[in-house]
Length: 206
Image 1 (cartoon, rainbow, N blue to C red):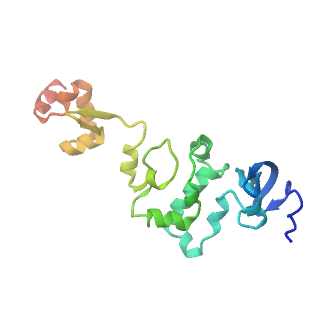
Image 2 (tube, rainbow, N blue to C red; image 1 turned 135 degrees about the vertical axis):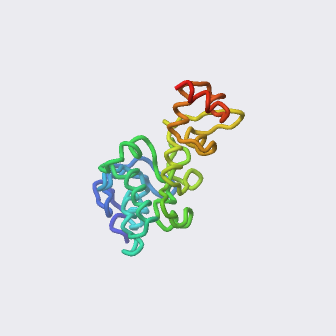
Image 3 (cartoon, rainbow, N blue to C red; image 1 turned 90 degrees about the vertical axis):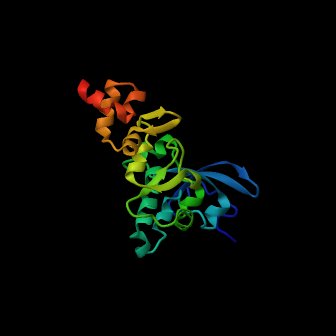
């Protein structure tokens, strides 16, 4: 018989979790509020605790890979993602976990993350398509720093003739420098600034 089968588990430690108090019940098990050594707080059911299936908030899974796997770029991206979302002492936690940016349950296991995202391509990192939402397959991609920079909330977009692009993309498509296009936008309308025939006029006005 399990040593906890007939007794409360309040105050008991299971791996990195210390049980605080019961918060409800689910089917044949009770639900308990726990604190993880990393600082996170989770609710989990009694059965998974006493059976040893649940031993951390999820951060504990970071160590469940062999040494060679931990050296890969993909693993490093996954670990960084987990850390900034789950570890309250992490430098970037206030920009992620503290404001509700979380990692989906499936991705708290590295093998699942690797299966869904594949190996990280060179010169990319993981990027959330919608920066207000968390990390899950439909909202994530491997992207270069340039692509990620254009995905930030502070990036200014310009719409002209039914096309909406950031300044960098407009400059690239027109074959101009980004600073040059920014200057044109300061001295003339969008319609004129995005048309090559106004280059000489713009130069004459400087």
